[in-house]
Image 1 (cartoon, rainbow, N blue to C red):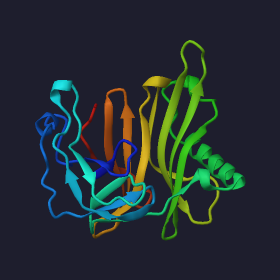
Image 2: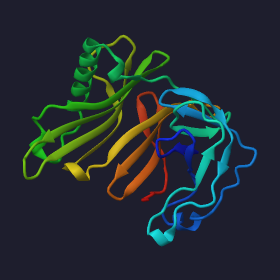
Image 3: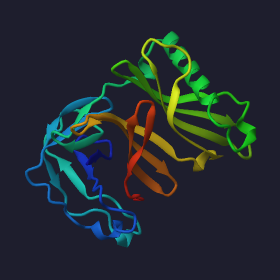
Image 4: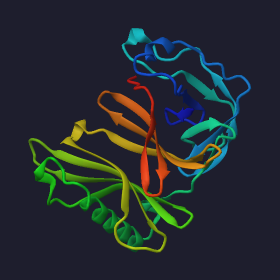
Length: 250
């Protein structure tokens, strides 16, 4: 898998799915064999073209006390992209961002997410229980007769000396045309000091493999580094992590 890095169109990291945290050191300086492979490039919700890839000479350096994926250059980038997979393995799922909705529809979606979040098991930290939720990001898409939402909602405790935050990343479903809360099929809740909470970014959503199983590809940034992951739909209303990468910390 390729991941766009550095904000440029032609810079990529080559993610090797079989590498673990314990073997990450072994691939530093390794040039993966990508000759003849063509990668399809995906933005957040669209296929934006395909390209061959030229690996660069080095990955991260253990001498610098950090580890990174091997680096590569995209040969013919056409537009901004986030993730690349070997051609023929995935199709894009069109995502609608809460930021692209009308103010009325955006408010309705935010209210539905607040209802959905409120129905989940309570936080272990009671100080957050009565605080309002704020939507940090949300994307919706359709699967046949089902509407799916992928969202990051937070509650903040703005104490001057110790600002704290509760972050709730969730995936929910409801029938198309329904209103109100979603049935949550996956969620992860974490609370703590604002600067220490990992941030989960949705890179894209794809239908993967012959079964066309829907999956959200995410990147989780924390103090310790970053980790990529696939959260796949394993059944109606059910989502779970099916793969997590090794950590990188450069």
